Image 1 (cartoon, one colour):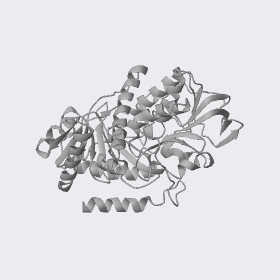
Image 2: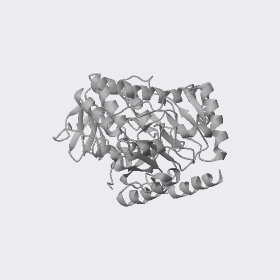
Image 3: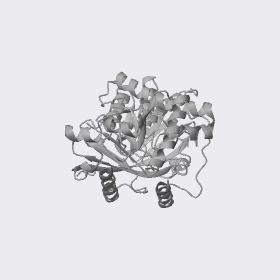
Image 4: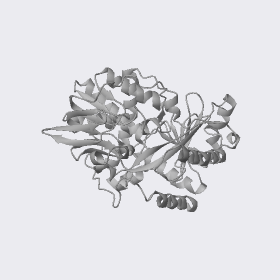
Length: 429
């Protein structure tokens, strides 16, 4: 078993990073080499803006290369919750922004000729308990009538056409949802940004940020660079940087571990018995699971597993064992299947689980996707680039207040209690 991301291991790494010291001046400096930062850099470079991207590790090292491979339209919340929180108009606009971002991903892939196995698979939201059916069905009817007609309901009797498991009691299908190879997409974005003129430094964490006249000076172990504007796209990995440059975000982002296993490639018979519908799948539990088939027919199976803010081999192995048990409960015929990969990563959550993008603390920022970053971050990256160029009308998250979390300075000490609470809700629901 490899304790590394399948997406990293099965994609050619980005090979055009700068080899010399970090130096010079650019119009815009981007901190963070995931989907958000890379699409911001790509857009800026295409528009003739000089841009440098500084990544603390390698391109795609964070959430963009460690997720479950889903591009699911819809929000972390149900549409009804968003409507109650924001009102109907804002909730509909936010919901449709996720649709636009998946459309944008498809367009970027075509524009930049990125080979990343993109496919409009549809998403299956599965009712894990009989008691969940009524709520999920009501959510479907509300959503279908008001904002997403490309949804449909599947009764339990029809589920065998979609999934080879008796564990579920009905489902909702989101037809616009998609999937892709995340490692190939993130490295393809980096290649495109570089091709259009962006300078990209890897292994260059920003350790300090200071005003230098009208400019910002960013310090890294590889040198210093100045920029007129700075974009922060660090998300859950804001804590990987020195505290001072990103304190504002560390106090507002909750970094939660999410863990994934990937089986050996399944045989055609195993595929037919597991996911005949070949969609992305998520369950309705608060501490649930998500799964899909990879381009080479592995079952990629993930979930919170443990409420931890640590992802290392020891932590990932513990979570992987829990995930294997969950996988066997859903798919008993895979109980003894070989597991080839086990990895973890951090999800950047906000207190209310709505993402944020705007300007604060002298920086333009976009983060806090709360488990839906793969699909939303490409659009937000372009919005951040627009903001850096003076355009303010493309940000679907504009105007959202973002208060800090009391007693939180970057280390989420309260996660075990959150896990107990959600576990209790699942048992009682």
